[in-house]
Length: 379
Image (cartoon, rainbow, N blue to C red):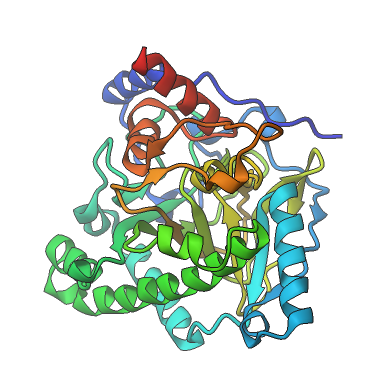
């Protein structure tokens, strides 16, 4: 039986040390070069107890028919509520189908992702992510950490559901990459708008499953200030030694992920890693730390990771739902009583984001560490 992965030494001093180490030794993750190297840099080699398992089980998750949920058929609605409630209490992971997102838009988003990551490194670095920021281009996390690096490239940008931010994604691509990327911005602006619409339906379902009504979480996430991320996992000649993304729980509220058909996502359930086989035209949904706090710990933040392979590039589109910056994350009063007292302190999303960007590398106990950090800083 595989043991639960232990969190690394993870506190402000260790991250500062990592920063200084990186200042001394600069490592460049140039995917077109490294994907053909028979020996990968040691910074990408993970400890034995965290390396991929050759005999992974498959996690069978019944997909939730979102269109059926909205028909109002009592039996369909009841089954959807039961399925999502059971999944979120156990591992925080579920699938949705018949979601209403235009498949051609999804395909185009994947095509533009291919186009971006196939550019030369210097071109991609025009959008270079700065240390402490959550947006921009990152070639692995070579600027933040010096060990257990993920075998991936990412491009992250802000998404905002506020009416005053209706062109925020388009503006980002033009301002950072130039006018030639206006079409990129248009496609991803449409994509994040589709994700915001999808979020409303999912929040209705979660509101019913937690017994607070359809509107509660929809209203809470109105004007959300979220993050969109393009994940690109290059080929690796030694996939048994590294990970595309290490074991962690997302600090955000909810992740809406569209993965290609390559496979590589894994979820930790019943003390074992389970592979998630891609289902065409479905979205993977996982609960993050912020929603776990919002549900007073009733729904679990999903522990997951990604593995890579030596044959095919893997891609995914991740929409990280986050509350508006001014929203205080506190559970509904109906989810708190003498038998289920408050588990986490009130906080705002920017404070948790700052914690994970400047003080703590997200892992399986981010929310507990953040709660302790709030307590220490309030004394």
